[in-house]
Length: 242
Ligand code: PGA
Image: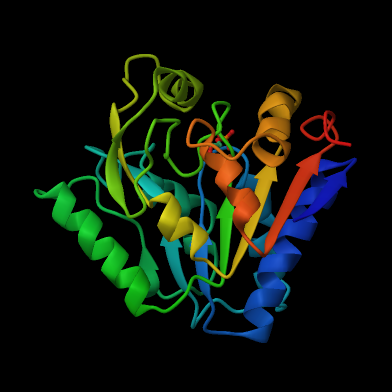
């Protein structure tokens, strides 16, 4: 595990974007595992800038997102399809047919999950998987539990996750209670993992995830078992790490 600590958010975003950009420069048909939430927005901005400056093309890249809310259509302003379009896809030359996000509107959600894993497998290995970290140690939407699912599955969101994400929804809207998420097995199969964490409110959980016991009660702790994990934290999130 390589932990990189940054004294400015701009430097963190630049470095994270550079790691993704160089993955694509080396392999223009790279398979990228992408994440949503507040954390990666600055990274996507930097990727768009890299693209505009001609440093990278996403033309032959395939993308697979970690998760999607159940019940939200792709044009809902809080769906992760909408997020990806707004923050990255519509600003770069990625081929829409090679971008993949589970459908939270599928009639048969279990079948959608099964097919999503099949599509990832057919693409070969995810070259680099971007990850944020929930306050409760979730990755994707794999919430702390007695047992974790290895493959893509439907999950009931923890109350604290709904609360944390309520900030993105308008007052009259309810955060969906369920989501489809890649499982921890799917995530851990990626060749390289890049965990990005920002903010003092995540300092405790960063410490627990990276230095505490490996336990399903802190799904991110399983990342410790991955041979190629790079962690990018700002000073605040990394303040309890030595
Ligand atoms: P955030 O979410 O980037 O919005 O803090 C991270 C997560 O819950 O995985």
